[in-house]
Image (cartoon, rainbow, N blue to C red; front, side, top):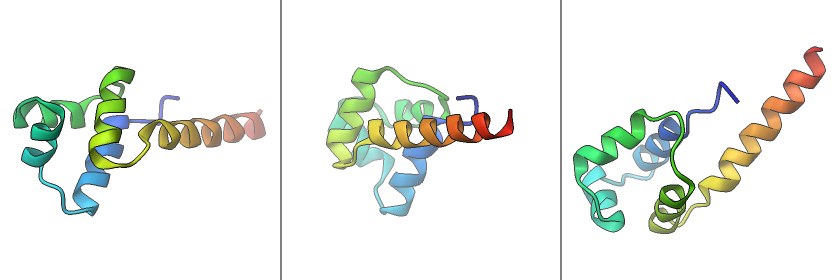
Length: 79
């Protein structure tokens, strides 16, 4: 799991879809500064991840799970 950085995944999604941090902050009820703090976090609370997923209409839980599964497969193959 050490290679999964959910904040970076969210930031990449937002950037690639032309969404402003201000818009996301408004949608989830926080400040723009907090959005940048979220981007910097390796992990975040599931409740917050669900709020972000709903705001962006993208399931980040599935994204996290797919990366976790891929990393587990890689680790198993390397042992």
